[in-house]
Amino acid sequence: MKKIGVAVLVSGGGTNLQAIIDAGKAGKLPSCELRAVISSRPDAYALERAAKAGIGSYTVSRKDCPSQEEFERRIAAVIDGAGAEIVVLAGFMCILSADFTRKYSGRIINVHPSLIPSFCGKGFYGLKVHEAALGYGVKVTGATVHFVNEIPDGGRIIMQKAVAVRKNDTPEILQKRVMKQAEWKILPASLELVCSELLEREEKENG
Ligand code: GAR
Image (cartoon, rainbow, N blue to C red; front, top):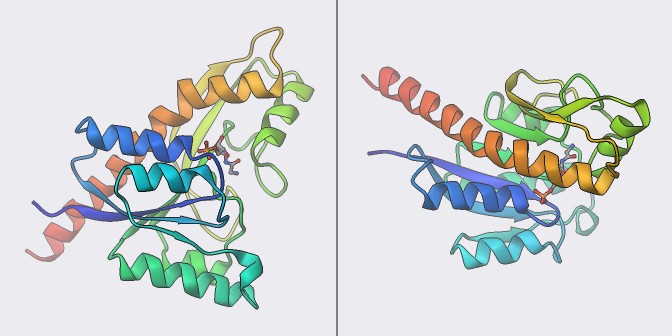
């Protein structure tokens, strides 16, 4: 049975990468095969998670590249070299150009820690998202998995899950709850959905 090769791009702790690894081990990703983890930072803990799981891991740092073009060329070389057809942004904190998102159109998915279209777009990442949600006073927040296009957090939504805000939440406490109750669930589920649909499409095209 063919599986879809997947590359995961990370920059930090990699708890979402871990959720994908764990879902795979639990047999919940029958259409996917993790082929590569690419980190934008050499010290990202996500790299250790990848090593422990026996997945090939690579660092491509923006500051080691003379241009954005070269940065993306190196990332694409790893993705394509690993035979990955789907790319997951799991806490990847670098901007990708329209050229890059076009090259992998319909094949890049991202997890964002709010209910898009709230608290998303340029400047909204990591803890800042939860600070903004608490600052606004929303009573419900959550996470979104969406396709990536040239508009930051603007691609078609695949899955969302709501999470209640509690009275004494800090951004850190809320971030943890959103991860646990939403991100770690909908990211692996969306990945399997996207890969299974791609498999089906490929099977149809190949007769
Ligand atoms: C996650 O909360 C993810 O949704 C967020 O960064 C965190 C990464 O955690 N991503 C963004 O804000 C992207 N706009 P992780 O490294 O433990 O998966």
